[in-house]
Length: 253
Image (tube, rainbow, N blue to C red; front, side, top):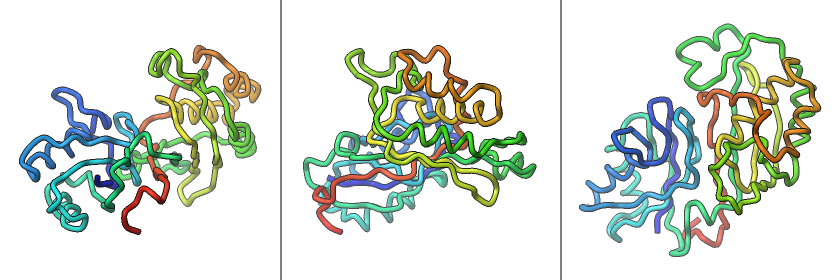
């Protein structure tokens, strides 16, 4: 079993998952691997990023013929893949490795540009341009409220999880930080729900721009439906940064 660590610019993709007549990350990888391996190769991702979402640490699991060493596979894949997808690393894994179910945590970041140049076409692919005053203290308060375990029914797309799923996620890191061009939000959890990070960002920004009171954020953390959530933040600012697995699953350092 092989683990691929992927970087991609999601702007021109219809998301991760294979879709008929649509350009997707999974479909692109499977097409190239099929040519290299002489037949269909199933690619399993750690998570299904949405259309327009980027990655600097997406993980995919594949099974390939034994003659494909990690170094050779990485070299040939990067020669065949389009310019907006890059294989950063390849690792040999234990047979029981599963890109999705073996993961112990996932970390995302979100970028917001606060200067006029954030509207440049060279930045707006990867940031949410915003020229409004931001209450940093309100953002920090919202982030601190996220830590721990919650049912995120108020911040998830309705109906995308099984009915028996309790929508519980354990948030292990949630922080806003200053960056050269504006702000960045880092969040890590054992799992995330569909659109969850973008709903969180959109709601936090509405609180921090005084479009809604802080109490709304607390209410949504205890809500049983997403009726009152703010619109999701644009996909362009979101990056899947890292997926973590037990070290015992790696066959080599």
